[in-house]
Length: 283
Image (cartoon, helix red, strand yellow):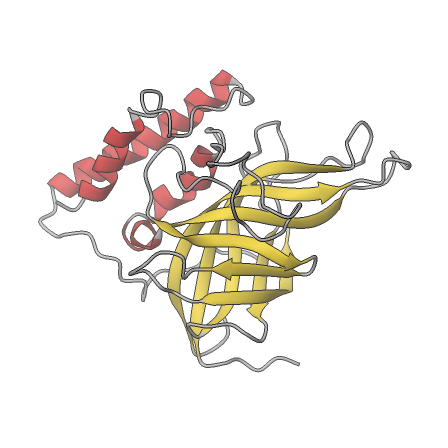
């Protein structure tokens, strides 16, 4: 049945509290916000189920006709094709000069686990738009060996103690991991799951635009981080060339370092769109 993937996902969400390894509702999120978000989520799933009953077709994962969400970002370079769509769930990491409370926090990388959302993007784009916001209603579960933070400091490579490989409210298939190899190089490893090898890509930021005014806020009311277009640096594999971060939820730092520690994390979620193909030319 067309709706089987998401319907199974809806059923699995009911076991979140019963299974300790699953993410639990975040106590930081106000209950009315949780209820509103989850209501939207299950209403969307109900529509998928209803549409699926009326259609004999099976769900497909064909990305050839899927369109990137509209924004002020430039479109993908000519000749590239959409290879993979993932939802990232993790933290944006910041540092503060505690001797100067009026200074602004400085972004010091990010770490996230990436979950395969290609089939949802191709068949249920309206549902995909709800995933980042819904995922933020659930806590980042602690992985075996430590809290949900990267090994080696803020923004560094993931490892023992990195984010657990589940995301509430449903059990998406793992795509890979996102971290920074240095303060200016976001890195995506999509080769971490046997049988699902999409490539790896170190990136440089090419363009940025503010998230829409109605973008989902974070657990403490933080604004959504900016939407980005990234290009590949040397060393990319799988012919990956460009990455878009869109559909962001949460992740922004406070305006100043007043009352903040020297380093801290802000939870976020986002869609990541990966494009591959002929190598584009950059100045």
